Image 1 (cartoon, helix red, strand yellow):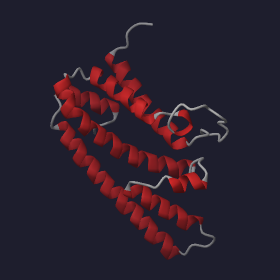
Image 2 (cartoon, one colour):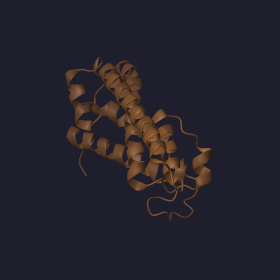
Image 3 (cartoon, rainbow, N blue to C red):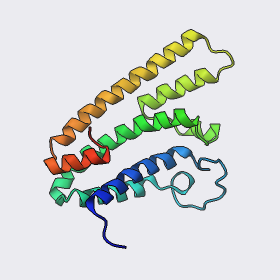
Length: 181
């Protein structure tokens, strides 16, 4: 197999991002809920999010052809953008695929850390009630929309900060990867 072209590399990174998010939010038993014992491979269900993120960062650094000094400035800003995008995407994926495949005890043990996730959990708890009132649902829905809007604003700001330190070529590459608009 020959060396990947830059565009193929970019597409690979984008695919890896989507795959990583899918796996991370599928839970320990995968989408079908029948994962069985997968051994001790780290993370949820054998998925090591940190190792995957490090591989993605290494590939992006190489594809963007940055020096170590440039990367030291770009990487934290890029990671912030990726985190904000993952927060938004993960919450929506959860909505599409239900609460996830994790058990209730595991869900409660993993306290949410982001406002969008907290608001989403609170709305889900309201919807899980036997007969929630319309007022309860509307209040939780408004809170979720507000949290999503704040996350969106943070993302726009983070993307702008990232653009400030990029060359035009690097910016174009990140647009192709879906990290920037």
